[in-house]
Length: 67
Image (cartoon, rainbow, N blue to C red; front, side, top):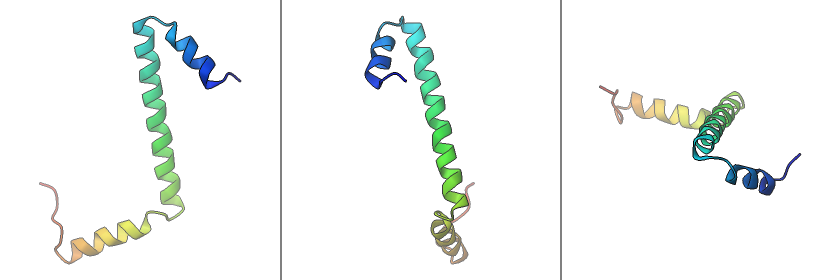
């Protein structure tokens, strides 16, 4: 496997259009990783506390629905 430094050096050789294409792919990939992390956190119950807190605030009128 290539090192990060090798990949960076190769990207630096690309023309601007190809750099934009790589940047878009990387942003999309990073978003997928984030989505996967959130899904894993939900499955593991790591967000339950925050969900319950938000629901409790809503029940007590401390929040209001979006328009």
